[in-house]
Image 1 (tube, each protein chain N blue to C red):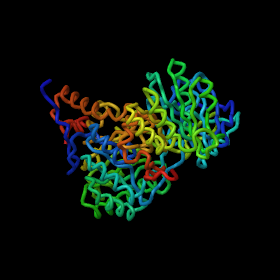
Image 2: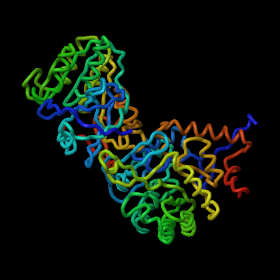
Image 3: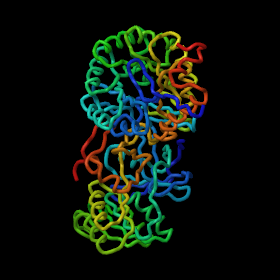
Image 4: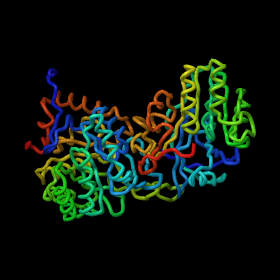
Amino acid sequence: MSSLVADLAVRVGSLALRNPFLLASGIWGESGDSLAGAWAAGAGGVITKSIGSLPRAGYPNPTIEEYSTWGLLNAMGLPNPGMDEYPREISAARSHGALVIGSVFGSDAEEFARLARRIAETGVVAVELNLSCPHAEGYGTEVGSDPKDVEAIVRAVVGSVSVPVIAKITPNTSDAPALAVAAENGGAAAVSAINTLRALAIDTTLHRPVLAHGLGGLSGPAIKPVGLACVWQIYERVRIPVIGVGGISTAEDALEYIMAGARAVEVGTVIAHQGIGVFSRLVDGLSHRLDELGYASVSQAVGLAHGAGR
Amino acid sequence: MRSIVRVTERVVETPSTVTLRFPFVAPAAPGQFVMIWIPGDDELPMSLSYTVGGSKGVTVKAMGDTSRRVQSIRAGDAVGIRGPYGNRFDMAPRRILVVGGGSGSAVLAPAAEAAVADGARVTAALGATQAPELLFRGRFDAMGAQVEVATDDGSEGTHGFVTTVAERLLGTEPFDAVWTCGPEVMMQKVAVAAASAKVPVYCSVERHMKCALGMCDACALGPYHVCVDGPVFPAERLLPLAEFAHAHRDPSGRRVPFGGH
C-alpha cells in the first residue's frame, strides 16, 4: 500500500481543485499578497474576505478573544475595502496563479446579485455568499436564517453570474439543513457549512463583554463536532456538493468531514495556531491517511460514514 | 490570554509622550509588543518600552484620537494586556547604531539596554522636532551609549534630520548592525545609507492591527504579517515592497498613502 499516492484533486460541481483544502473567508484575505501566500503554501483555493458595496472598518478592538487551544472568539464586523477597491487585490493574487473564490455579503438579494456580478468580473472561479456571519447587523445570519430569503438571494445571484455559486450557511438556527435545501432550490452549485457559532466572553473583573461588539462568533477545534453534525445532516438532504468548515486542524479532522459528506473543506483558525505552513501538513497528512486506509482518491471517501457512498 | 492589570505609574516623558507602567509577568524581549485594551474604548498594539522583570511599560506619543485616549489613562486605572507578540531584536551584534525618530526610542531604548547589558557597544542617533521632544535621551546616557542628536528646529544637536547624523556615523565607524524605528521614510533612508556601508539594518515597523495572531490580515505588509513576522524586519525584506515608506492600510483594508513626510 505504501506505493499508492492518493489523488487529492477534487471536483466541487464544475469547480476543479488541486486539493480539498480551501483558505476560509476572513482569514488572510484582505490583501492579494496574502491570498497569493496561502496559495503558495499549498491551499487548494483561496476565498477572499467577504466584500460589501462600501469600505467598512469593522468593529473596534478588541475583536478577538483567544482561548488556549480549543477556540477563538471574534467579532471583526466584516471589515473590507469595498467592491470599488478590492478587485486590485484579486488581480494581485491571480497574477501569482492563485485560484480565487470571491466572497460577498449584502443586505438583500439585489445587493448580493450586484456584488456577485462585480466580483465575478475579476476572474474568480466561484462566488461564495456570506449568509452566515453571526454578528453583523443587517447582514450574514440576519439575512440568511430564513430558507425563503436564502433561496431568493441564491436565485438572484445564480441569475447574475456564470461561475458556480456557493452558499455559506449558518449553524445559528434550528434547522440549518433546511437552509442548504433552500440554497439548492435557488440553484447553488454547492453549500458550505458552518460559519462560526454565536458566542460571548465576559471579563468578570470589569463585568463587561470582552469584545467591543459584545457578541461574536466561536471558531476552532471546539466547533468541529457541531460542523460535522451539520455537514452530515446536509449531505442527507441535498444532492449538491457540500464544503465542510469548522475547527479543522489536522488531516484526520478533514477526513472526518469528508466521510460525513464534504467534497472539500475550509480552514481558518488553525492558521493562528500553526501558521500558513499548515496547508502542506494537511495535504501530506490526508494523502498519507488515504493511502493507509486504501483509498485511491478523496472522492472515494466522500460520505462513506453514511454507510453507502453516492 | 488577556490579563486585566492596574496601571502603577504614569510618567510624562516629553510634552507629547507618556509612559504607562503596569504589572505583567510574562517574559518579553525588546522588539515585542502587547495589545493594550482600554475598556470601553479600543485595543491597540504597542511595543514594550520596558521589557525586564514583572513591571512592563509602553510609551505612547499623542498622534491620533486613540493614542490621546491611551495617554489619558491614570495610575490605578484598569487596562487589559495580551501578549507579548511578535519577534525581537537579535542580540548578536557587538557594535550597534540605533537610529530613532519621534517615538522610535520607545522600542530602541530597551533593546539598547539589553545589548549593553550583554556587552555590546551602542551609539544612538536620536531625532525629534525639538529638544524637549527627544525621547529617552536620559536612558541612552545612563546605559553608557554615545548619543548624537538632531532636531528639526535646531534647538539641540544637528539642525535637520537624524538620517544625516546616521549617514555621518555610518561613514566613520565600523558598526555591525543598525537598529531603527521611526517614520518609514526615515527608516528607508537609513536602510539605503547602511546598505552602501554594508551594515545590516533591522527596522521596527507599525501597521494597524486587530487579531495580533497572524490571521485577520489587517497588518499585511507585502507577503508579511507585521504581528507575527515582525515587527522587526531586516531592511532587505522591506526595501523591495511597494508599500514600505509609501502606504499602510486603514481598518477596512484600504491602502492609504503615508502623508506629511
